[in-house]
Image 1 (tube, rainbow, N blue to C red):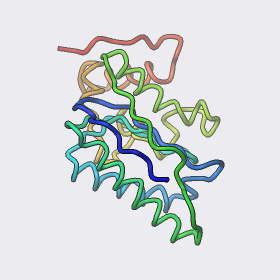
Image 2: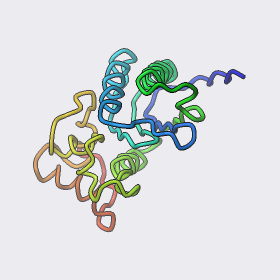
Image 3: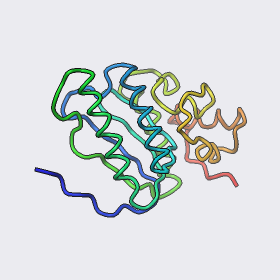
Image 4: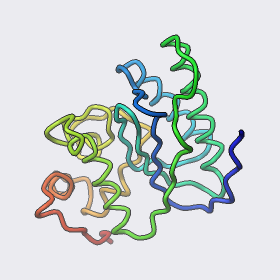
Length: 191
């Protein structure tokens, strides 16, 4: 039975996540993860999305996206459909890779935006994959705090403005916010 189409999604920022069907790894190795990132970069460009944050986990992913009116659905269809087909071909499998349809929750405030940034960055830590959010290669977080420059499809300036600018002090404030949950309070957007 085909799924019904989603209703109209207005322009805004969305926390998007998608899970696999059951206990199937969505990303088995770095080749899969690289392929997904290349596809994501293409969709971002084609759909005129802005990606503020992302993380790839073994069985799911998270994206923090700014989108225009009704532009999320076609991009997600392209991203998930082409990736699943390539994954199945590569691994000689058939059937669904993805579970239910993706979730897209609107981000409704500055505090909610920053909570999403923290949640996405900390996902591998909370899952026990790594000790620090800065250690996970398949996340935009290390790029955001100036530890490397790998994913050029992610726009970091919006997150950085909440903490001041791109100075080393501001980047450290982001790290404190994400990595030290006892001290990490939600800052106000810098003017």
